[in-house]
Image (tube, rainbow, N blue to C red; front, side, top):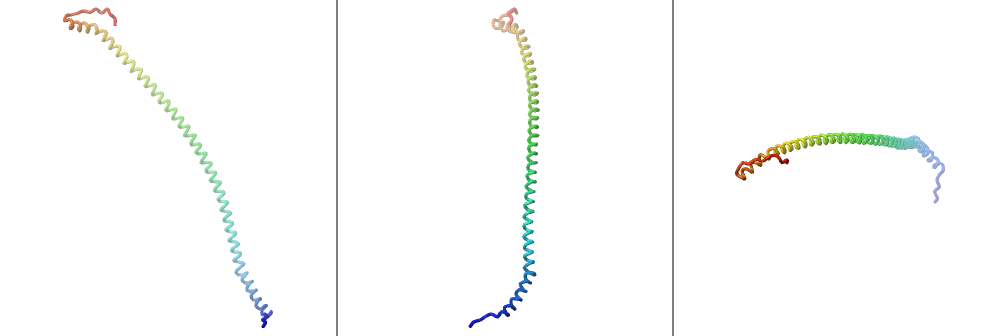
Length: 151
């Protein structure tokens, strides 16, 4: 038994199928494909904009870092200049203090030398009298020493 399809029935079944297929294409597939294509364009556009923003941000970051490095350099130069100025001022203050201390030491040395000379002169003046008293006590009698010897 051989079953052969009837071409009329097949044509009648293919017709509604093609109509349904065309209806689905225009009502469902074409809008869905258009939506997917728009979505793909939106995603690729967003990726492109993100890359542009990233590139612009990188350029701005590099510019800011360069400006920051320049500012750091200027600050370093200013700090070095202030440090040098402070060192010069400190050296000047130290030199002034040394000069004052040296002058004070010279004045005190001169005062001590003057006092020593005064004490020596007083001792020279009292030496003869003291020698007479000591010799008189040792010998038990009064002695007079002439001041002809120069000490």
